[in-house]
Image 1 (spheres, rainbow, N blue to C red):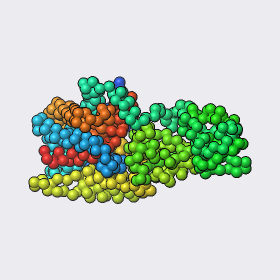
Image 2: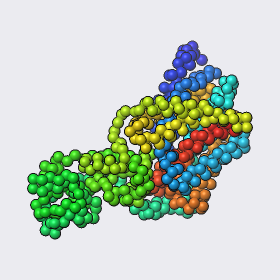
Image 3: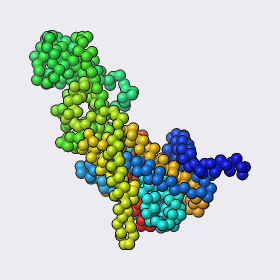
Image 4: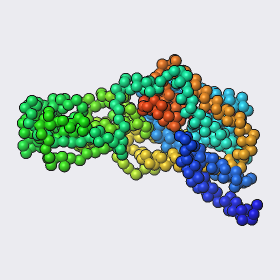
Amino acid sequence: MSPAIDALLVFLRDNPALLIFAALSGGYALGKLKFGTFSFGSTTSVLLVAIALGALILGNTQYDLGLIKIISFGFFIFAIGYRVGPDFVGGMKRGGVKYIIISVFFCVVALFTAIALVKLFGLNRGYSGGLIGGALTQSSVIGTADGALQHLSQGHATSALNLKSDVAVAYAVTYIFGTAGLIILLKILPRLSKINLPESAKKAEAELGSINTEDTIEAFHWSNLVIPRAHQVENPNITGKTVAEVEALFPDYVTIDIVKKGNKIIKDVTGNIRLDKGDIVILTGFRRGIFKAWEAIGPEIDDDLIKEMVGEILGICLTNKELSGKTLDEIFKDIGHGCFIHSVTRQGHELPLAPKLKLYTGDVINVIGNRPDVEKLVQVIGYPERQSKVTDLVSVGIGLILGTLVGLIAINIGGIPVTLGVGGGILISGIFFGWLRSVRPTWGQIPTASQWLFTDLGLNLFIACVGISAGPRAIAALQQSGINIFLAGVCLTSIPHILTWFFGLRLLKLNPVLLLGAMTGAGTCTAAMNSVKDDSKSAVPVIGYTVPYAIGNVLLTIWGALIVNII
């Protein structure tokens, strides 16, 4: 090797920050590449690039990069707990018993399957943690397994570092099938059971009374745009009728927001106001609902009142406990006059818009309407999710401290010190703070952009450190146990999903589409859930996905520390 290359390698080894940045940039670039419809994703790509850099550059040099890993993983796992906290706590409280049963069944089967496979294939503690993380696509397992290994190997630094490297190697080997293989498996299972997913989705939508909509804030059909129109009352058939009676004449949802009687302007419109000939009314509704309003009311006019109206598009987080568990129809029967529901999201995933869709604390209802009407609705439903760039770093810091302290607690079971590890402790802290935010929304705000930064960059920074540290030992580990790890991963991805499919279908009698959503949630594989949405041509799988996703995130993360302790 030339002196120049030797000097370059020494320079890079002396400055590991350059390797970390290279792993991040190279990994994100690789993650954007698509092979057909498949891509490695950012996390797997960062890990692969980091392992390659570590193997090629570090040689026999080893880095633990411990402090960076702890900090970056702490931010990541806190944000995960914060995001799933409302659904984890709420899901336990509000029922959805079948989804809870599915989640626990899947996670318990996965744990015992992993233990059996580790024994069968002769894998060590490090491989066992990475096996669960990769085969079940739960990246946080790497952190909790890493922490448990550190705790168990106190005083044996080299042994701990080797086992941590094995975690990363097993994760990298099993993750690709854990994602791509699962997507294929979930296409095969319904066909073997002779189930038509689009038809099953239509049945679920029929029960909900689903409303078809493909509009977004950025792109919409003009016919679905909410618009105000001014009409003068001339039709003798409505003269003397109340506002409520006139609104009821329209087949679609239409509201009268303003009434002008001579020089008197009524902006706080109630349903019992009677309309007289010559009154001017401001109607608000979808174009398809009001474009023939002139036939029912009278001629459309150009009035300055419309020019003065200010519309508002706002997400409202449901915090009113009296409304939690009620359907959209029940909630908006007596409230929300002048407001039009654009979408409903849960954990950031859009739910099918349906009259019988049940809403729970933490759900976000995105509404469009006249600003006074929207603000009035906020007072009843909950907290306005206005765009904000401010993160409550005080609460984040407190949460990280408390979680770290919880994770340091060790309980001796049979002479073996069992601990959640720092990762598990911070996850529990994040769940608590996320739930607290859902019931006290003025406290502990972490905007969506900040959550993404914590989860995505926090995880991948941690993964880059893990991969670089694992690099020097990766090739030897692959040669020694690569095939066994891959086969174990295939089994661990497949067995829990297959058993859960038949358990949910035959014993719990769940709708197949909702069951698949629940399985992808419990297995924490969002890519597979999106594939099920495409196959079923419906957003219904999201209903089954959210609560199991919250439970799966918690249990599988804990399993990472548990399997390391018991193997």
